[in-house]
Length: 450
Picture 1 (tube, one colour):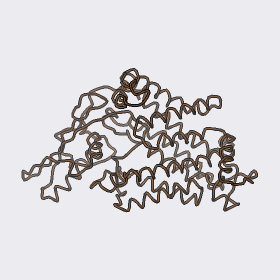
Picture 2 (cartoon, one colour):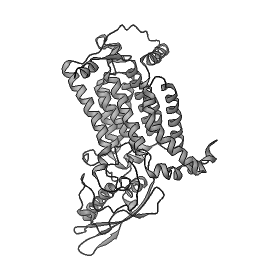
Picture 3 (tube, rainbow, N blue to C red):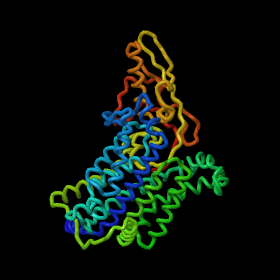
Picture 4 (cartoon, rainbow, N blue to C red):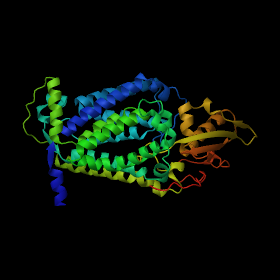
């Protein structure tokens, strides 16, 4: 206990957290501007007739044209976080607005969005505005050159968890022994300059698979060590720039590049701040001062950060509670840092019947956007939600107690397509829950590994 108490009372330079706040805020601001400029607010959050809410978050409703205001609030919050202006309000606003956007439609889910939400949540508890911020400039009483060590270490720990789980998730037979799904994805980029023609070769898919797995499993530990840190950071830049070129994952690679800077020393970050001060012609006059939580706030913050990390460690393991192949059922798949691991292509044809003998085969395009239909066709929980949408719709059309059935075929990582949902199951009678979905047919194949 004394060791823990000594660690909690230990302080360090506030510069790394200040640089992280600025870089993270700027990256998020650019991401939102890019999202808006490409017209994705309209196509993803306004145009659809129906949305796929996350279980337990059904109260998060689409906002129609007010979605633009939500994105504007998110962008303004990101700017204020970067500046350190009204930081406490801005970071809470950024967390709420960004997470609300993320939760509106499950068909747009990406691990990357979840990562951003979790970092915003962490930053709510951290004094990232006491150094090199507008708040600290306006309020001398707030200024501090040093903060508790735990405020830096919790970010490092979270990044380590993300990388390690992403690496462990690649320790499976599809990824390492069959180079799937990279054998499907890489040849699609064979028109790239220089390396494009090489992407047609199977050995390149194996090389990318093995290097990707080793990278994820080793990079956080190499970043932690001073001797290997510069080389590890070069690897971070190369790896994430390459993923940005090959895969449509937006600003996430660049967010990870700036996030990895948190592993560098305080002296490194102070040099960055000195350069920024010269650019903005700001003068530095700080003398040593340490930010300290009040005794009650210290206990609460330390406890909250510990609970946060425990949840991050436990949540990716929840798939072990479910029978069957997680790539197939996707029970416990989300929020587990399983990044870019599978290629699923599917087809789902729904039939609605009623007691009076009415029967209709549904045209999914009448209800869903192309992206929603593509994602729904391979994910059992989305299939169930859509079945209930159809049940409600056809009840309004005069069907008596509509029954909903689906014929679904899904191909996973280059395998032949096979039925995923029991076609005899009336999905209108099934209820979404955390329980195993017994109406998902067995995978009848083996994917060995984590």
